[in-house]
Length: 433
Ligand code: ADP
Ligand code: MG
Image (cartoon, rainbow, N blue to C red; front, side, top):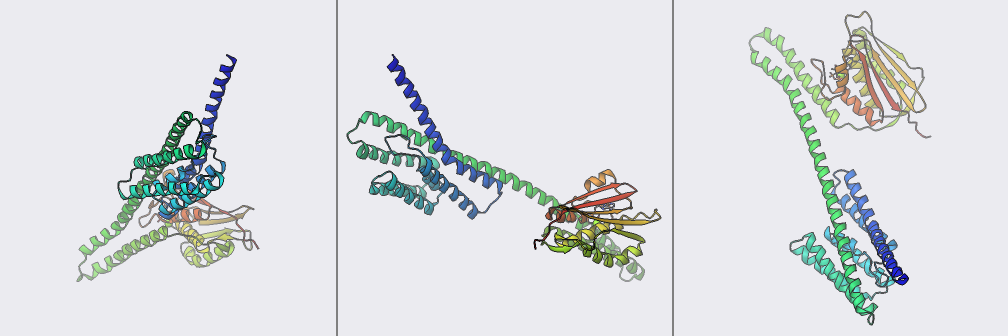
């Protein structure tokens, strides 16, 4: 009874160790494929070439791992799951790549498993012919896998009976052979299923993402046409009323027409700016930037009776940024501050404060204009949000994008009727010298 117990125990043990071997082999095969799936889902809508390269790298890695670390499914037969990568290459119709894999497999088995090269060459040619045949007719994964298994079992049987145990125990061999074929069948189906299901899910996610993008695009197009339609409708209204012989009407309406058309042009300029923004950083001097801005905007500010106070305790302040883009941001901010001027107040001012720390540069622009309500404050930075008759609602949006491209941050705070404050944080990147 002790003996019997021992044999059952050993049998159990060997079944568990077989299972472990199969699982290990599956892990070697699946790891690179999973990484491939993660990669293509992370990089949405990659083009076909990149996809091909990623796929071929994944399959090559699978092949490498299974050849380097994979274990034979049975100690008597030199059979591993190394044909699975070939099957995957076939399933994706990578003809050239599958030839490469076949050659690698032939060389490997000749050298390390001492299989007859001629037999291997015949085997892989049969695979390839089968693949070509399937390619010509209807190509279904089921057909592919069944054809693959039939060829595989046939050659496995030849290897087992002819070369390895010509005078061994046939009954046992047949059982083992059947088991191995079933294992190969299940594993290759499972891995193929995993790959295809994974790709389907990624595809589905991508199309969801595309639909979302398209929706956004449509919404913004709708808004643009809407924004452009308004001034043009106004122009049309005035033109309808215009009588060329009536000089009085002409002098009254033509400036309005001009300003409406101007507004449309500005809107379109802003929108074009917005769609093609890109930054090119270089070493810039922020102090110089403000000096330049001040000299060009000073006439405008003094005509509106606005004092600008600079609190910049530096002679110069160098860091990496895009000079013209930052200038654009500050012009937008100054313009908004100017337009927010509260005429009921005795003094109107704009305070500019710049502070530098080791890691950041802080810029604060504060005006004592009309301020914003809580609702307005929430919407600042949204495309086309404006409270102005002739506003485009793109200035703050553009500024936000530019600061974002600098890996910085822009925030607004305000109290209605009192003040508005814009805070910009930029990373303080110094040029290595
Ligand atoms: P626009 O200036 O064309 O209206 P912006 O994107 O520059 O577009 O600004 C959007 C809105 O944000 C403005 O219409 C205004 O209501 C509000 N806003 C921005 N800056 C200020 C400010 N400094 N003071 C008060 N409101 C402001
Ligand atoms: Mg503006």
